[in-house]
Amino acid sequence: MGKVFYIMGKSSSGKDTIYEELLSREELGLRPFIMYTTRPIRVKETDGVQYHFVTEEQLRRMQEKGQVIELRSYDTIYGVWHYFTADGDSVDIAHYDYLALGTLESFEKVKNYYGSDRVVPIYIEVEDGMRLERALKREKKQAVPNYEEVCRRFLADQKDFSEENIQMAGITRRFLNNDDRRLCMDEVAEYISCEKISASAGGE
Image 1 (cartoon, one colour):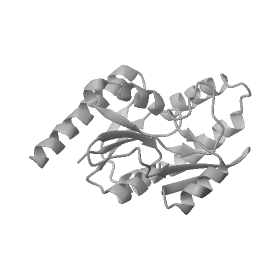
Image 2 (cartoon, helix red, strand yellow):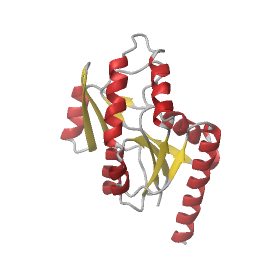
Image 3 (cartoon, rainbow, N blue to C red):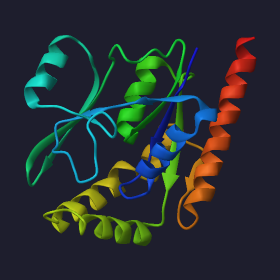
Image 4 (tube, rainbow, N blue to C red):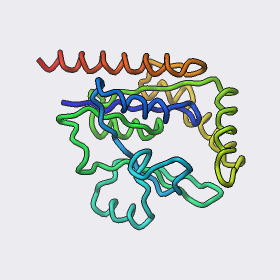
């Protein structure tokens, strides 16, 4: 049986970069567990890589087919954006290990769907001041920067990733990404390798 290694963290914690780096490490043997969103695609994003970018109508059809595991909706200044996880034909957790990227809420629902023994949390943490600085720097690169949305996300993350919520989700290990991103990536990769070895030994 495979596992889903679930990366999460507040916005601008570097989790997207870590996710892409870990997928590129062939020795880990991880497949992408790609989620869905109805929000517009951003600069340097690719459909089917960071997310499957879909329309409201496509989301509705997937709900009717019972394919949606969890769904989150956010009321932004651009309108309501939906983020969701779907159990599609591309996922075969019985035979492969996957790497997922999402929120604390989505992690808990995916864990409930597949089982706590199959979904492993990887929480990336960054000091708040540094995280806000990174968010502003990233927003400046957008065609039309929206700093109000950056502030909304920052405050929302403080609530969503409260210490109480983190503890309730059963997260005990944290990976710091304040300064040396390469070191953080290596620590996460080593952790995943150990989990895979442990799972393999347990199945023998």
